[in-house]
Length: 132
Picture 1 (cartoon, rainbow, N blue to C red):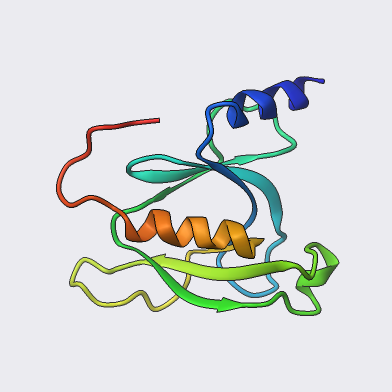
Picture 2: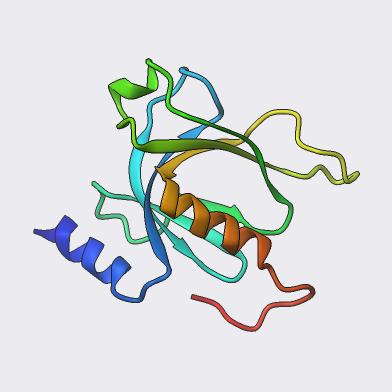
């Protein structure tokens, strides 16, 4: 009941998407089911099966780069469904170079990915005025 109420509270304000998150890349770590909320400066990711009120991960928008896109591998399909798309993300280095290794992998539906890419590409220049 408490998990359902928490999810309702996270979803009621909009700007969110169901997605899976995995730290790093490859088959080393498990996928975590969650819910991402878009803000001006970051994507805040919350675990579905948790009562913790704070996000489990914060993905700052500035410098965030989608490094690759793929369909789930056979190993991924043990935890994910085949209708999801996996993107590897990282951040641009301080010298402006592209990231070498992904920091996270995010799995979401094609429609959710379109929204994520739109959010990422529509970042306003300069400072921010709105916070979720």
